[in-house]
Image (cartoon, rainbow, N blue to C red; front, side, top):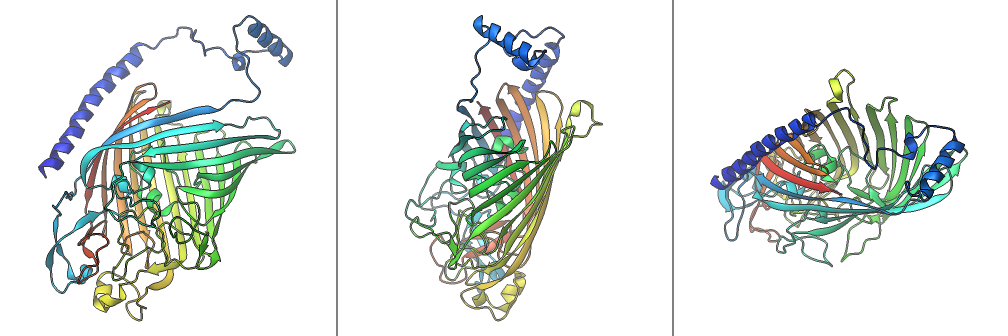
Length: 539
């Protein structure tokens, strides 16, 4: 407890220091403002010059001959961009250390033990992205983002380019920062240690095909998922930590093709056809690094469609879309990978854990998100954002091991049905839904705040990875943001999560089947508090 309070004091003390710097910086911005003429190198460009096209061309030629203006190539070169991000995070949860594991009173209705029994158990937050759910406090190197792009121009002609996005750091392990077993294996055991990873978020070829006075843009390869408001790049999100919608319901990356068509200035339609694997190259059960994009001997593919709307004043943006997989998707958690005798997935990397129990069945997900800046707020300082998500899976899984617990235990856990369950598990249907709302207020050029409120609901059978169901989960988050210099940002975050079984205690050790019970000692609903200090430099 003293360590947790110490970490909390460090975060808040640093926050007060940043607030002082922010006020000084804001005063400098206000005092330095004026109506003087901007004579910087970028103040005058070809777009600011007035005249006919012939006059513009002649003037540009004169400037180039005099060495005042650089010659612009018709085809832009390769652009390099990215950022570096580090943080200090603290989860106010008992943190295991070497030979010192928290002692939890195992609950009979949850664990299957005959009576309340003290056991050594490991805390785990399966609904959080794993780097956001590590117990205790420590410094983190979250992400080094490196992006290379040969962009397409606005010209309506045949043209091609590419884009690659590489992320290195703890987040790059996609939820397995400290428990990667190694190559040639299909799961992680918790016995290995890896403080970093390499994640190729995007790598695709892009080209444009003219269609009359418009054009269609195509992407082929691996690209960031179009589903969801939040993205893998933490600095691009309103809040530092990933939300429970992004982590549990939405893919991070997909592999396949996509087409973009801009109907007019307000509407754009996007369609895509990808493999059935989310966050991995293919779907199916991996065996020593190889997968065949099949679930239960049936090909697995996903079709998605998104409609983007932008208002004329650019103050309201909305995207509505859906994803359809006739034979199911795999992963994320639509059916987990439990060991024999376990009531749930016994893994500490549930974000990308696949499942041999996944079976064929229609999967659909609907998504709507957007942002709105009210006109009636002075200087457009206030912004709202929202997201709705929902869907169903007809191949959800009741993990193996639950039938042996008996009807009373199943009823206590709200598992349905409680009778007639096969020992190897149960295939059925399930549905899920969630929503999120955001409020962002910019006090000045330096200081802003962002609030986030989220809710997740899952019905019977398995939909969350490494989780017992059904359940309702809430998340409330607030961030204080300081833009102290060009390309330099610092955020302080305070987050609270609450809901049935948000924290799960496993015992005795991962990969070791207990002599009695099912490996789950107890569940806790919270609330659970999270504090973070985030530092980002972009380039």
